[in-house]
Length: 403
Ligand SMILES: [Zn+2]
Image 1 (cartoon, rainbow, N blue to C red):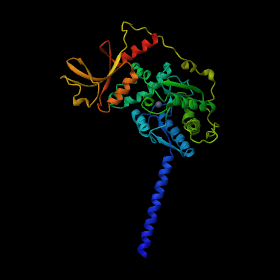
Image 2: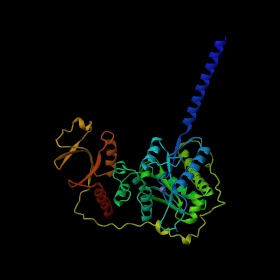
Image 3: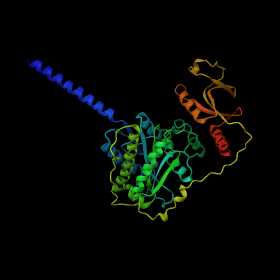
Image 4: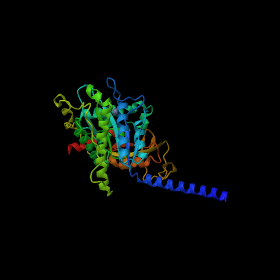
């Protein structure tokens, strides 16, 4: 009898375990939306530095506050942080975290800086071609953290944050998330504006971290650490709470519209939180002292007419390997790739796949090819002559402008 009772007890514990595991599974499955919150910089990378505050700490405090608010108010949202502590995460590593978690939204949080102490206010970026020098400058500064990595040249495919030419790649990429990114960015700026922050608008520039993330993605510049009173605001608990609440409200609005579009039942209105702006309102400035208006206007670049002797467009290919000996195109070294071609250069046979004037198409072919041929890379030709990819892209851009 006694042993029977023990067995019964063990059996009921087992059943309880099974039930609770399946419950937690159901619960986990309910988290249908993943937001990745990326606190910019960390550890030896302080980001922008003010008179007393550091960007990395402001970014982290606002990120944690934002994540907490989302987790408390949305049971169906999984909140993933790229960092929760003062640690260094490479730019690509941040995008990798978003991609491996199948992010539905990526929010990168940063703090702005300027050589002048005058500019103030918040701006939100989506990936795109920078239309102004000021926007390019912000991207250049945020991208430059890749220089802290010893192997950045191979890891970032030759992207040099300080070279103007490197940014041409952002002109030619296709961003299928651009509409949603702009939708969220606009919501963020709208909320900032509502909550007495000076709204510097939604902008575009070439940020590596946004480029490498396969999801709607924005980069928020909370304010200027280089402006004394704004630095006070950004570093204060009340200021950080106010900023996080504004971003939270933008998230709630975005999620509400996302659910509606997806046919998920929603409440009557988005779950907004009232923003308290009682204490440090560093945002109450006289807009006359702002010079940032000039930074927002679209400067249509004058097209320098390049030599137009090349009537043909450049052609892109993906180079897979080089050999001193001529190989047959069904050689095992090609791993079954179809339509392998070659060209000769300095007594080498160089083997390629793809042949297109469409840069987006060659990028796709390149991505596919690197699954088997790790170090495959894109090359360009014009009229049968090899030229650099950057020169090829410039030719395409200039040709388009002439039309
Ligand atoms: Zn930053």
